[in-house]
Amino acid sequence: MIQVKPRFQSFEEYLSYDDGTDKLYELFNGELLEVPPESGINVEIATFLLIQFASLLGYRRVRGHGLEVEVRGEPRNRYPDLTIIREEHIQQLAQRNTIRLTMAPPLLVVEVVSPGELQRNRDYIAKKSQYQDCGIPEYWIVDPDEQTLLVLELSGKDYTEVGSFSGREQVLSPQFSELNLTAAQIFESANQE
Image: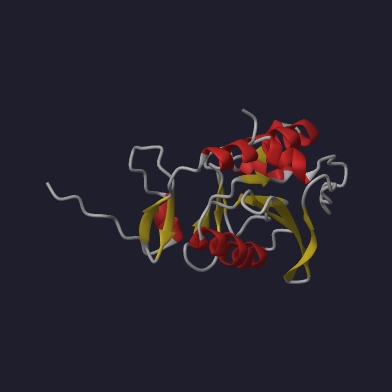
């Protein structure tokens, strides 16, 4: 039996689709592209940051990789490695863990760069442009290969660099100034034997 891949004319049509699995998909030109599993290092870093933010804000405002963000362009949705949502999102996301363009943007999205030039460009260029377009106030790019954390802040309609942090430098977050974290702590979280 031949399986036909569904094609979607709109994001709303895609949102009503359920293939009966737990797979995550990006909607690209009307077609579903399965999101591959994250590397162990990426998961460890994202989990470490999730715990840090949950202890600061409470677990309900911190969402891991399963949160979907609708964006303009292709693909039409992204799954950040970590997202800090607004209080109002808690109720809005009760039925489906998707932040729509019609909703207020999340406060922060974090992407942990996967190995490879394509993935690097996706996080530093494509996702940056899409998150900026959504009006997300703060975007972190955590780069395990370079051992750096780039913090970007929305200024007007464009992201500006708050700083690129490495080693024992204190991470500066415009949205979460009470966060007490160094870049080294983030990368050491994935280097425990």
